[in-house]
Length: 217
Ligand code: DX5
Ligand code: ZN
Image (cartoon, rainbow, N blue to C red):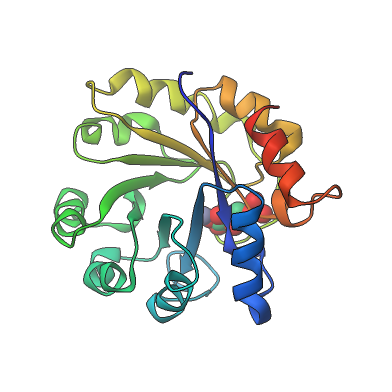
């Protein structure tokens, strides 16, 4: 592991009635990025929010936003999310009938393309894309819900992807159940971007302390 660890805050755990205050709180706490979980009720058994909500959030902060598309054929929405201000657009390998084509659409829309994989998907299924994307997002829970426990058996995929990287600077993010208690193991496994929802919003000593301890566990 080299360089600094980034904390990306999952808005799924925020109070949606007070999103403005929640984003300000995350910014003050030292989060480096916002993580915006889009669910379609098809790829995952749950529905969240879309590009209009992102556009509203975009006006509240300068923090970069990673849109995590838990959506079947997410390329359909690339232009819409780019217009709403997404910086990174992360699609599930399992949700795309033409992953290469989708990644091209994302880049052409002006966003950084990312690939996410479910716990049951092997790293080898996506290592051929290490020179085309800016981010890999390893799901450490089954996508669809916040507040689950991290599955440690997903973490060895990070090293497989890192080893396949061809000199391009790649973010490798871990998403699902990341918190102060397991941050050391996630960083040790090679991740540089730790996505956390419940682990930030529900940390007993406050969000700033959670961010500090996740960055330096
Ligand atoms: C799960 C989402 C995650 C999740 C993270 O489907 O992709 O981003 O909300 O939340 P916690 O940290 O609560 O697991
Ligand atoms: Zn997510």
